[in-house]
Image: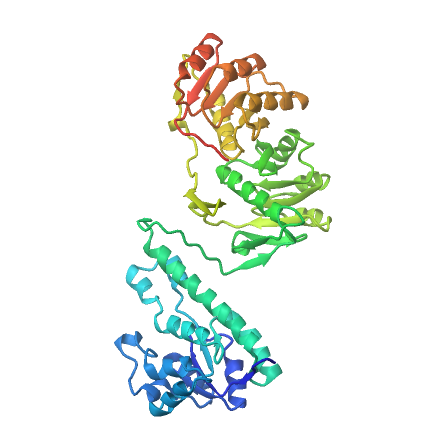
Length: 510
């Protein structure tokens, strides 16, 4: 091993003791001199292992309620000295500073404390000072010191000790140093974001301490990774590993279905981030059947999502379709037995989780950050712009269509009837094209557009869309309004018995 060094001394000071016991025992067997503090010192002593209190090095007790324990030149000198610097070694002798070869330290659980809803004082006390300083010092001096900065590394470190009997290579020390700086930067990011809740400081910081390499990115020649806690959102029951494109579609699916949380049974089928089928019914089986009817062609290879438990009857229907992913809050045992018959079909149980309140995407040589579109159009948002008002059933369909429209690529038009997606025009460069595409698609699948409704993600600059819609049999429209030529569309609707409501909120999705 290149520039291998044996461990002769160690400083151990951790918050989490789980997994530490076997490491301490191996170090003791190897004759390593151990220094420690507070609770960790007691933990090691209780194992019957000799430990030197840090106070014996510094001649200072732990003070200020434990806020200051290891912050001392004799501790940091032992960590930061360079073995190949004569003056460093002479100063160690002159000031009676012990050499420290190994530092095992973790940090106070700041993020967990914030997540628990603790008060500010308790949160502030979980900002680690000594621990973060020890990590940075040991990692900086990786040429001479090994830094273990997280209990997540205890198992691999234990195996390393067993295999090499306490001898560690330079490459191993550098690798653990990289992990240590990841720990420290993630920790500092969490603290910064806690303090910068009002975003008064124009700085964007994100950090994920869980990452996974994907089979590839959007295409096979691109490398892809997912950084985040997937297991917090889903319990994966079955199937192959999710791909980059799967994850994008799954994200679109859960965002869309969040609009129907705790509503009547609703089923959606998505392809390339857009809904190609969606229906709300009295039972989930019928919701699936009617969602599939919206576009049984595009449904092939799609992402399926339900807001209700999937039962045997629904699973039997789904099993006849080739689909990549099925998502539901729960499944009956019979449904699981049926759905898992396809080896690669991915079955996910969606947990209740909190969506991020920010949307982030790369742009040029930086990133764009915006607030999540948390606005869902509701009855109280509707302002009737025409002489004719929509009836109760039409209002329900208008709001249903609006929810889908919000989660469909712009420019988009969504056509719906009886809480079923009839068709949508997605990602078109012209709103007229989006409408014509939606009408053509609905007619291809034999839908009767008479008395259906239309939702638009932005205003109509000209009356051409409402004219095309009226000629197709559409009788009610929802749109944000705000065009300087709104009156032209309103006049056409008034002349042709079409009701139109405006929400005042645009839902572009680029």
